[in-house]
Amino acid sequence: MTTHDSVFSPRQPLIIFGALVVLTLITVLISGITESAGLAIILAMLVASVKASLVMIFFMHLNHEPLIFKIFLGVAFFTLSVIFVLTFSDYVFRGIA
Amino acid sequence: MTDQAHAVEHHHDEEGTRLGFWLFLYTELFLFGAFFLVYAVYRSAHLEDFKLAAESLNTTIGTVNTVILLTSSLTVVLSLDALKSGAVKLAKGLLLATILLGLAFLVIKGFEWSAKFEHHLFLQTASGIAAGEGSPLLTPGAEMLPNGQVLFFGLYFIMTGTHALHIIIGAVWLGLVYFWISKGSIHPGNVGVLERSGLYWHLVDVIWIFLFPLYYLVH
Image (cartoon, rainbow over all chains, first blue to last red; front, side, top):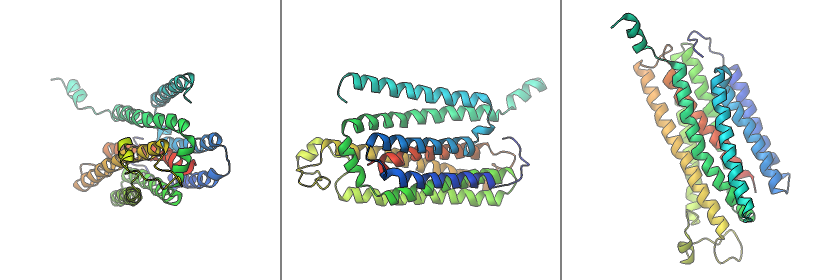
């Protein structure tokens, strides 16, 4: 994103914004459909992940960044998920869950 | 000093700066990641209390605030696009809109918080509850607020409070950017600072995208 003479065109950001609002409404509407707390949180986190991805790819312009930015992102999320998995395996193994 | 050395000294690497800023954003990811982990562990230990406590939060207010933050993400990305294309006035207007939306988010959050203060749900301690300062309103017939609900509201205030602090920092930063655009030090040929403040603002939005369902929807 180094072009300074780009033409202002709000089309793509508006489409992404529309998708984000629709996904917000969807996640509110589907929040009550299941009695299973586990399924409810999985659905909610799934929608949240899609929304977060849209923001990072299009609003934070990851789609225009070089590969190294995406590798860093992958490493960060991988590390975070390792911390989550290890903490939960310890937690469950202790039998306090 | 040779011309070449001089050139290197004054070379400003926008891409490297941006990559460095993304690294900072990952430290924020881990800050909130730790909060999310604590939430996940306590939620699995106190599932019923968490569901009951979450019902006391107003989904409509949470949804409105979510849309407000999403809109502010849109305005800040459009502001950057506008500045890049040379539309300085439009960029400033969109930046101002972003700041105002951030403030609207904080005002709504403030009303929400004060309602919880009135019900004595703010950061209760075990001793405070034992002294009768706890609120039994969520569980009919209960003597005091169950531990799980105390944990829920404690996490609610700490996580949304840390998030609100980031909104304040982001809004101040965007305000400075507005001032620098007015002064002319940020202009269509030098958009780096606006770009980075926008990235920060988007990250705060991304965090809210996860906070919203965890507190307002999963019950």
